[in-house]
Structures are given as C-alpha cells and as structure tokens.
Image 1 (cartoon, rainbow, N blue to C red):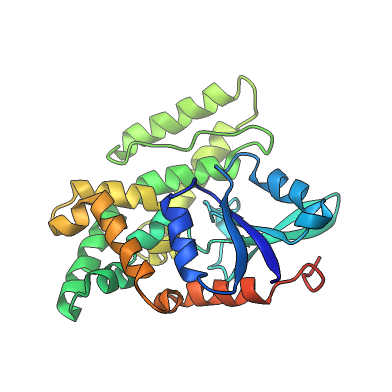
Image 2: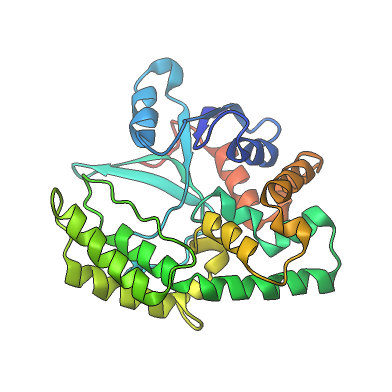
Amino acid sequence: MPVTILLCEGTDGSPDIRLIAAILRGPVVGVLRPSGGKEGFRNLVSNLRAGDATKSVCGLADGDFPRRPESWVAPPLCREWRLSVNGVETMLGWMWRRKEIENFFVDPDVVARAHRWDAPTKVAYASALERVFDDLACVTAARMALTAHAPSRNRVDTSMRIDAGEAEIERALRRRAAEYNAHANIDEDALMASYRACLVECRSGGKFRASAVEVFAGKDILAKIQQTAGFSREVKARDALVERILLALAGDLAPHTWLPEWSALRDAVGAWSPTTAPE
C-alpha cells in the first residue's frame, strides 16, 4: 500500500475525516489520521517522513486563498502540495483544489445529489447561491488581500464580518495593517491596492467570481446562506446539511465519482509511492 498514513486537517470524527474516508474508501490508503489543525502541519508531515517506518506519510491540506492573486489560475483537478526549502522541492502530498472542506458542502452538484433533487430544484438552489457570492465579494477580496500580504513568518488574521459593508471593510483593512506593523511589515497602500484589484475579480465577470464555489471561503458561504432568502430549510440548517451529505457519501458505493476532483485525488493517492514521487 503506497500511502501508509494520510494526514488531513481536522479532528477525529470531523467532516474532513468523514468526507475523505468516504472518497478514499477501499485499498487506497492505510490509515487516515487527523493532524489537529493547520499550525505545524507541514513540519508534522516532514518529521514523520524522516523515519523509515513512516516515510510513506502524506498530507492533504486545505487549498486556502491564493498568495499571489494577480497570477492565480484555476488549479488542476488534483493539486500537489509541494514545499521548497533552500531550492530543494519536496512533495508532501496534496492540497484541496478548493479553499477548504466546507466548499464541498455548498457545491450544487453535491448538495443536489445528497438530497436527490430534481433539475428545477437544483437550478433554484444554484441561482440563490449566486446572490450569496455577490454579497461576499467585498469580504472575500479583503481576506484575499490580507493573505497575499501576510508576512511569511507572522500569521495574519484574515477574518471579516460577512455582513460588513465596503466602507467598514476598508477601515478594517487599514486598522489591520496598522496593528500588524507593530511587529511585522504590511504596506497599507499595497494592501489597499491589492484589495481593490481582488474586488474586481471577486465581482461579476471576474476570475474569482467565476470559480466562487471553489475559491470563496466555504465557511463564509455556509454562514451567508443563513442570512439569505431563497434557500429551503434543509439547506439553511447548516449542521443538518453537512450531516445529510456525509451520510449520503458513506452510503454510496462510489462516492468519489460525485466530483471529478474527488476521482482525481483518489487516483493520485492510489498511485503514489515514496520511490516514484517527484522531488
């Protein structure tokens, strides 16, 4: 078995573990284990790789916001997670094509399949979701800009109130830059310029808006659905929605076929080995 341990973000019993366990069911991976969270995830995989008994450890990380939004293009269906240290690049595993695991729980194809909706119901849901994306454009652009300007050695809080208006968001960005400049350099003018550039791409017609179900924050989308008219009660009940999807995946004989990226990940994990992995 090529991958003896696959580490992922989340905790025991979390949606992350349950979703991955469903789509990788069968002789694809030895043990699926939660890493506990984002902090130290890369080091955990690297340190485990150093031991002979655990050299076949890989990780599956969240996609997160792009660090270089100006040059972002849609990633491949299966995205490798690579780390470069002193010019030496190592493949640690894979990254979700989407910002985070929650993005899957709002995807029209996934939601419709889990609820066994007919075509008109799915279209109505997708239409309502477009209004959510429109409303989250400013918040998403701000979070992307903060991610792009976060110093590599200092973590920056990118959280924003999902119902904040444009003026409030601009004030929050300037305040955030001033706060972090006490111990890390964030150029306020560059941050604001990046925000405005991202905002164009997060609005209708922009590249991020066209891929909103993948690149907008899934947690923000789920939260905004609760505030938006046009969604049925079965969708507005967040925990029930997630549980319905997870149970549907667990009960399907081939859940990885629901999305092309799930099939691509399953194929990549199954084909990987420490001797053939590109370095």
